[in-house]
Image (cartoon, rainbow, N blue to C red; front, side, top):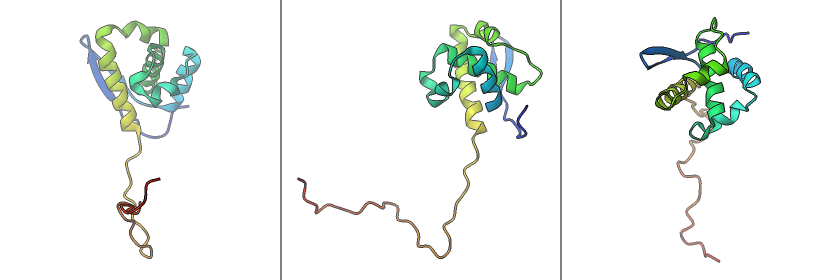
Length: 129
């Protein structure tokens, strides 16, 4: 089942070919089953993800961007070469960032006092034990 929200598509050109990526949790679940790798661990720290996590997350992102695509984790693995890892990783990170909700401006209720910038009291006279 495809998500009802509008996906933010990120394009990346590698080797003269254009690839489209989008973040969709449902596709990550499917790719995780196919790859047998915990893909959420890759999302926690994109800089430290394994090759298997990158491959699975890219597969999910490609499927999300093109729901008619039947690209497999094995096919995505073939696309990953030394020169394509960083452009694909950057595009994947952008697709994840674009999927995050926009920061809402939250105003405190009118009857509450404003919060101080530094709620920690100044303890410059405190004795260090």
